[in-house]
Each structure stands twice: as structure tokens, then as C-alpha cells.
Image (tube, rainbow, N blue to C red; front, top):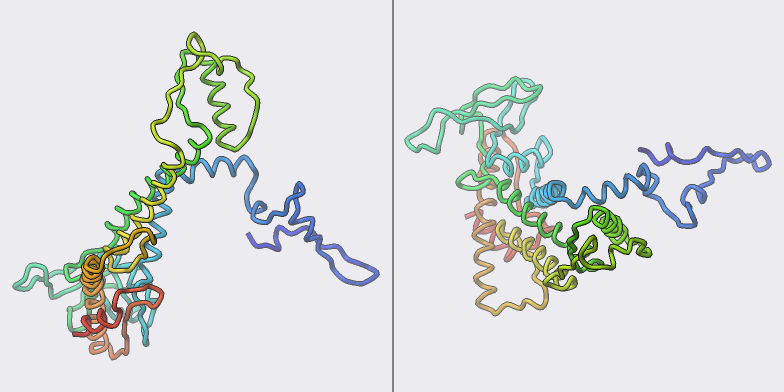
Length: 331
């Protein structure tokens, strides 16, 4: 929704012959300045969305998008590429490879497709068949009027790894939220009375929303026979919160390191020199293959389609020994 579509109607000042918006009234509600609340329907929907967004399915979706968004920017394509570089990277991350072809309808493009007519090697083929919306599609000869761009030497996509870490990170988010709420309620209760259970549930909802209220049901204050029994949680809430945060940071570090991207450790986690060297070698091993495959494809595209396309590691990612990685890929 556009901002001006929800602004109050302008007032015409006859004396000054100007148009005035009552912007201050628009931004101020209930004595508190707000802005984005006007893009939400109402408080009831905010509460509903807040409870849903941290549940496992939505959290998995959030982290999948976040990790995919970061991974798609690892490499930077330049030169006279006739379409956005994301069209290449999306297909490589999702499918492991794609074909660069010149379609009779839309011109040069990349597309997913199937390879056929195997060579003496079962994983190498002579033909590539593709289809896409608005394109005529067809079959092209690999190495003559088609170039296969691989994500890795084995054409492995990155999406399975993204999904795996998205699931793990989503669980840390759910656990983190539970730990934060448990800072306010540190016991689990059991009762044989539905009335007492309903009262406790209402009280818990108030704690969840940060409301402080008096206890009106004396069933919450007595034990047994319609009252409650307390089961204390085994660990303190503050420790659980920090455990969740540390686990999330470690999972992010593991994700980026599997790709080959340096993700800074917490300062308290100091590594000895030999550990640093081993870590750097693993980073070089992981990122080098992906860059090498892309550079190989660039050379073939430039030769077959008379282009001047190049690819390098994106400067926004801190890679161990960037020059060494690119030199290895060139060699």
C-alpha cells in the first residue's frame, strides 16, 4: 500500500492558499508515535501473526529465504551478460546446473533442462533439451550452441544444504522464544480441574503478552483437589536464552564455512594457529570448486556466443585469501 493512499485528506488553507496534511495526527496514536502500525490491520491481527511467525513452519520458510538470499550473492558476474546474474545463480543453487542457449524467440538465455545422448562417461552428455515460458525451446548440442554451467564439478545444488540449515536454525528460534517466555513463567503445572486449567491458561497468555494482573482464581494458589501441582523447569531461563543464541551463531558459521565463506567467531572462541590454518584450507577447498566451474563456463560462453563475460567472488563476502582462491580457479 502506498504511503499517500493512507494519509489523511489534505486541508486547503484559504488564507495562505496552500494544501496542508495533518501528518502529526497521522503518526500519533494514543500518545505514542507510530508508523508501521498503520500497515497492520489491528492489534488482534498483530498478536495472531506474532504467535504464528515463530512457529516451526514459518521459521523454516524465513531461514530458507534468508540463507538463499545470501548464497545467491556469493559470486559477481560482469561484462556483457544479456540478463540478470540471478537467473544463473538461482538455477545453479536449486538444480546444480543450467544451460546457456540462444533461443529462436527470446535470444540468449539460461534454462533448466535435461541432458541426453551420453558419452563414454555416464555423467557427460552431448545434447541439452530445454523449455521455458515465451521461449520456443528445443534441443541444442553441448559445446557447439549450448554451454552447461555447473554449480560444482558433480553438479550438486546448494539448496539441500540451505534447507538443512534452515530447519536447524528454525528450531533454535523456536527454542529461543520458548526460553524468553519461560523467563516469566518458570514452572509447568498439572491439575485435575478444567476450570483451574482454563484460569492458568488465561494467566499464561497474560504473561506471554507482558501483562501483569492479579490472580482471581484461588485454585491457582492451592495444591491438589482442583488446585495445581508445580513442576519446576530443570534449567534457568537466562542460560537457555544464551544457549540458543550461541547455537544459532554456530549454525550460521557452519553454514557459511561449508560454502567456503568466512563467518567470524565470537571473540571468546579463540583458535590456535594450526586450527586457523586447517579452517582456511577447508574454506579454500569448498569455494574454489564453485568458482572454477563458473569461470570455465564463462570461457566457453565467450568463445561460442562471442561474449565478454567474467565472474569473481563478490566483495561483500570475506573469503580467506581471496586472491589465492581466484588464482587457483584460473589455473
